[in-house]
Amino acid sequence: MENKSHALAAGAFVLVVVAMLVGLAAWLTRDTGEHRLFEISSHESVTGLQEQAPVRYKGVTVGRVQSIALDREKAGNVLVRFAVDGTAPMTTATFATLGFQGVTGLAFIQLDDSGAPSQALATNDEQPPRIPMHASLLSRLSDQGAGLLTQLDEASQHVNQLLAAGNQKKLMDAIDHMGQAAANIGQLAHAVDQSNLGGMVKDAGVAFKSLKTNADRLGEMSDSVGTSADAFKRMSERMSGPGGTLDAIAQGSDTLLTTGKTLNTTLVPRINRTVDDTARTVRHIGRAVETVNDNPQALLLGNGTVLPGPGEPGFSQPNAR
Image: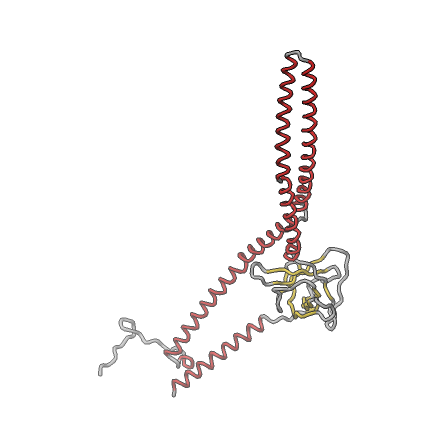
């Protein structure tokens, strides 16, 4: 009966300590600052955004998402209500985008300022002011994906036209006619050597006529090749120019790489330190539980004085019975 009463007292003590720790954590993490409510009505998808997701102004956390629901005023839009503290400069030039935390897929609201002349937004908790929502980087990349595929298809078509069987045949015919023209010129030179002016004039006429035919065919083929090359050049300029598809893909890759580096340098060390602290706490609690199990009276009377052992000063051998 006495052991049960000690165990009950130990359990009650542990529960009280746990309740005190929870209360202390809640008190330390309480938020006593003044917050202002704002809303975002977005036609874009907000996949990955959850309640209590962070709201950041140029990378600095200034608030949290309060609620996510469908907009009753605009059909097909998503209404996101969030609260920010007084340090965030919310003006008429402020806009929001949807950002993503590394490769986790979790989203957050990124606030920014266009830099245009503006004035501070007045707050109203009953009817919060609305902030415009701009398309995110991933949304723009997905929208430009269809255009990129169309441009690649056009490029393949122009290349196929350039290497078509008809163009190849024209090129081979032109080469053959050039060979015939060279042969005719050779015959003309031989005729000049033989001083056969009549044959020379006749052969020269045939040679010039053959050259004219070859020149006409080469002109037709060069026009076709030039048209295909111009189209391919325009498509390449659209893809590789400033603000083009390749530029947008490069910016998205840089953003993902920067986010991955930030995740590795900040989040992972914090998780490791938290795991180590948790392991040490569990070991301390385990040793405390073992002590209570071995000597439940230690909760009320303490550990007591440890008697000296054999060979230590003050040791006295117990009387043998």
